[in-house]
Length: 44
Image (cartoon, rainbow, N blue to C red; front, side, top):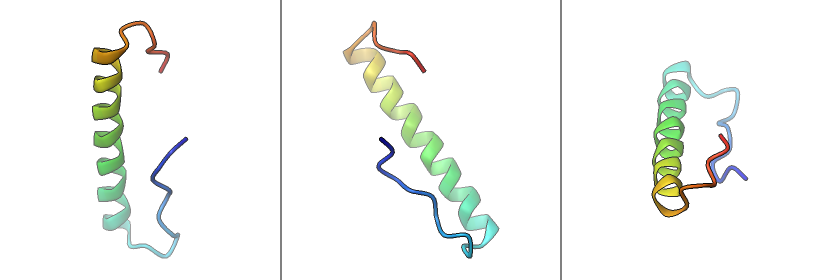
């Protein structure tokens, strides 16, 4: 269900860290949209 995959293992640590932060931000935005659109469907 994830549209963004994990970066390759050879990716430098700072890049992976930024990628992880971006994914967390993206997921929080999606969750916020889901909450505003469908107030009963937040399961985690």
